[in-house]
Length: 339
Image 1: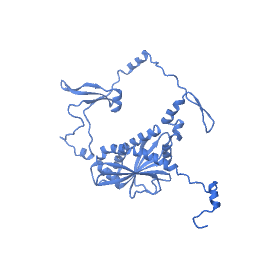
Image 2: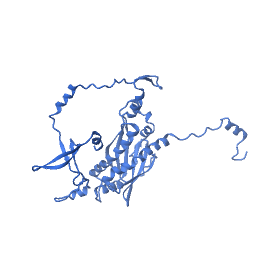
Image 3: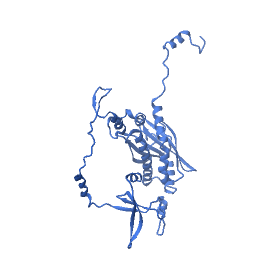
Image 4: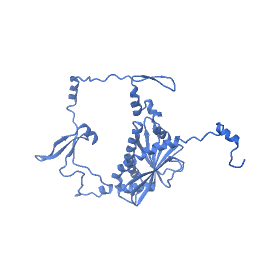
């Protein structure tokens, strides 16, 4: 037979299933990475907004790629590692990587100063910045998995590019940032592959087994509350928790216990306004400096109890002292919204 032509026997074999099996689609890593990418694409705007008050209004952040880490870290020179472990009942490795040069770009925009050197104070400033970022990430992952905590464990510098990841398999996320139209850099984020798999298939994770923060497992189990179930994999009988009927049992005498707290003093504060300043601006302050606040003249001031906003009012003068006339008591919804 000529090259590229099948014989009759080969054709028959293919028709009867005797040929090579058809190629299966690659599903595992590609699908899990795409789920993570969709989540992160929805958080980039919030991450940008959380950093702008500190870095500046020109700050821009863009997600450029999400892929399984190949082993080549595209960072040269000094490496800044921001460790931010993720915990949903089980800890997962997660961190950010910046080159020393790119870290200084962010720090210079934050402080308003040039010719900076990375020292302990600068590492602390980076950690404070990324505290805002991990709050956004924690909220996004909690929406997918239930209760998730993302907390920064520390910031280190000078780690070898070849050892910064160790032997763990990771998914690498690349962001491009701009501190101003003329200055840009790259930020890299790394996720443990086990966590990425859990994000793609939350029903298969440990949270469905009643672990800490098992928000999804609890809500889905509610439909079968009070019914016995059986594990399909082990055949073990599983009995759901039986909850009693909720009824009002509060007696008038119980409310009298509030009297035990009546003589407890609490701190009350009246807040005229707030503002944010760069470190450089604070260092330049002196006697006679005027600080502009975020409230307009005549606008109601905030009344706080133990630093919790509860009411609004207007400033008055009583004899020779300042006072506040309460003009509005905030509803519970407003207090939570403004917290």
